[in-house]
Amino acid sequence: QVQLVESGGGLVQPGGSLRLSCAASGSGFSINTMGWYRQAPGKERELVATISSGGSTKYADSVKGRFTISKDNAKSTVYLQMNSLKPEDTAVYYCTAKPPGMSVPVYWGQGTQVTVSS
Image (cartoon, rainbow, N blue to C red; front, side, top):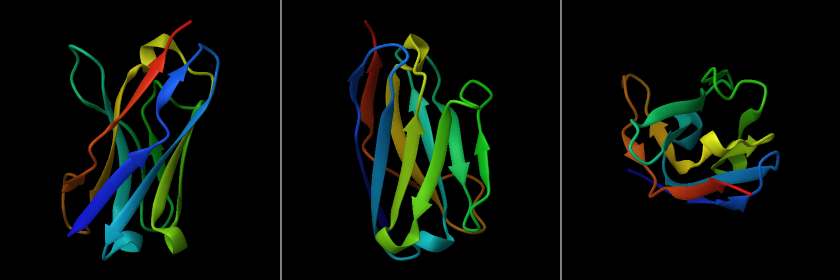
């Protein structure tokens, strides 16, 4: 069992930056694929970024070059550095964990709101 707690959301102006953190408790952090999803009002939930147990990263086209996912296995924490934020990045951001052998994330955090507005 893994528990995920996100933090770092808030209100930021367009062009600004935020760093989201996700603290994991339970076992197996280092072997899970960790990820960030987001859901904007009236829209489908979408994958933002993932980082594998080996550190390989993937990004949605909409955030490439602006967002960076990273993790600290010693702290069981995954981060999402978001730069050059746009109003369309406004959403609830969810941290996820996908154990080995699973095709979709099994564990989800409660979400943190990111609002990009002037």
